[in-house]
Image 1 (cartoon, one colour):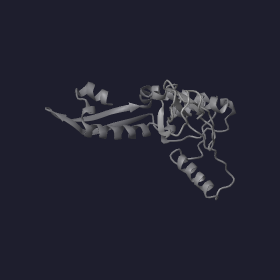
Image 2: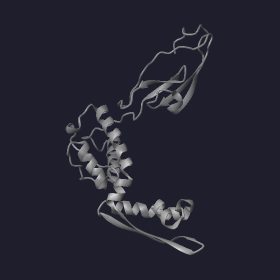
Image 3: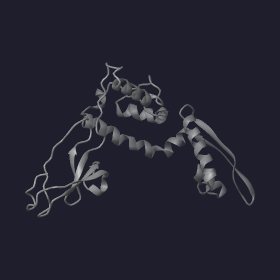
Length: 234
């Protein structure tokens, strides 16, 4: 919308914070409307002004154009979807149901992608996409206080957990999608002769290098008896 206005009027609305905020709000409204209609009107009177006077934004946006503009975002859904199936060791045909989460899943292009990825399976529409996360949280709360006993929810680690080792390497200890709580024991040693302490750097992520991973914290282990490197066991 900003590009189109700039082509027509020669003014970049992105440089005007107030105008940009109005444009964002209107764009969001248009996105929602295009989930149920094939075309919507965008009208923002007095959006800005120049030496010739006030300027107004008035244009139509079709669903086809919207889908063209956002296709790259939709394409990014495919990778995580396929990865989730691979992690679960499932095929798309083995899914019992696909539950929609978030208002954006109401968009026809999203639902069509779901059908394509699942071999024609219709998305489950029995739960409001805007409320499904809150409903899940309520069920979890019921489990915690023992008011719900016929549902079992297993929490998992969304990303791998590990520690930084010599050379700035992220050494994984707990793989992602591991059911928690869990524990893992690894034996390490010192990197230098006479070393009496080590710093444990805990990381999260799937990258090989520690610098590319998310740091969760550091703690120092002291009191290691002096010895040649590689001898102490940590």
